[in-house]
Image (tube, rainbow, N blue to C red; front, side, top):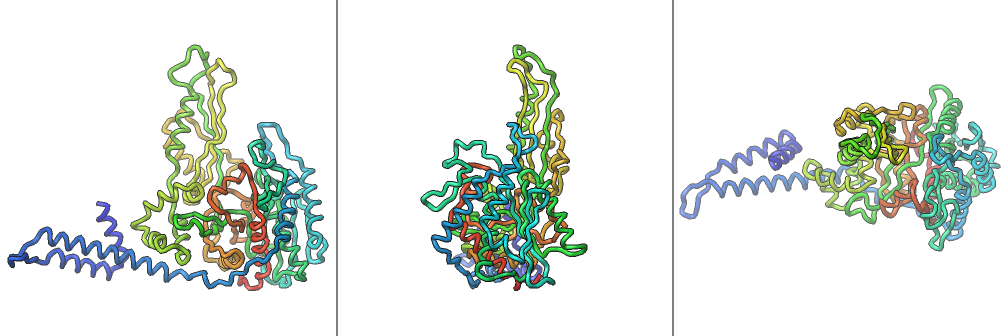
Length: 550
């Protein structure tokens, strides 16, 4: 049955003419008499064998033809003018020192409901402002650059461009970081800014997200020092101070300031904020080839409160056959064993656009998804990073029950953190799936609408601004790029009205997918080479804006 289905799919891909021709050929093969050695006309195994051979030949031709068509549609990037950065060891040492100093300022954002009772210290953000002023004197003394402090702690720089008729761009990052509660498990203290013998700086913020703050400003400083007083068009640099807790006091206020400056009906050409990195090993055969995933759409965010209070509290010496804790535990187990459905098409189509950069066997697979999609799905879902962009994620992050050791609790509760894939549309669909999987009406689910974020609008994958960004990544880092889904949430949620072209990417090459575990995790770090590449990317991006037709 599967073979017949796949054959039908192949015929469909051949089109009406090809399908008709195939039907005539196969009909002729099946109907033709076959003479044996004695001259007698027979049917049976010989005809079946010829039919199987014919079907195999057709399938092979379809697979080969689709592969050739895919490669012919997608131009190779190998002819792009790649410009190495040319930074010296002293330059890289300077980049490391700049990062180290920023890391040493622990600008931690704590949730208002922080369980340990910690509170954000705004004075440290003011220390960061002073550090930036001292570290980048050319930026802060340029007559073409103005710096505005937005809502006390966020920063907005405006570098006036030579062409005031061209739409500006905005580069974003954030000054704050998440806590580092397991500091004793780090190889080097998380706020030490330690620089090791391998030219690597360690500490919270090194990849989320002070590296973008520091290297964007370093790129501007470098251009000013080289004699470039104005970019081709105006560039805004926006640095919120509370991204890690939602951006309510930072990016939301920057958005209002930007809307006022742009004026009614005017928009930015594009926005670039933090996002996925260029990563090696995204697919088998790409272990040494980094691919840059540029987020042109962002997942939604939902906190779902799960409660069970079906049974009253009772003494632990007389335990009932079932408890609220047990009911909740079963619900959590079911959610983890049956994750949300996959949505692969957009991701696979994006990868297929890179066929000229891929090994031939991967190109063949991507050109013939009608045949290989189940296999590719299994491979992608085995990797956390690729799995994260293919479905709505489900993570139970907080579980509470009981207050006394000898009392069976009358309430058990947990929080589910969902990152909503755009194809799942909204929280209603996600919660409906949760209820179906749990299959127990005693488990109550409620979305926290105060923190809910729907999936973002999709920025067109064929926009000129995205072509420019992809070309810049190729020029600066020799890295091909594809539009992709951003699985986390960023400050861009507040900027949707400023431009239809919003991208999320950090121009740093990761050697392996496991490097992503540093985000909000242990041993966050970045190398001098990675910082040099980042500065070079931003420099190329700013210098080339005159060639962008948008």
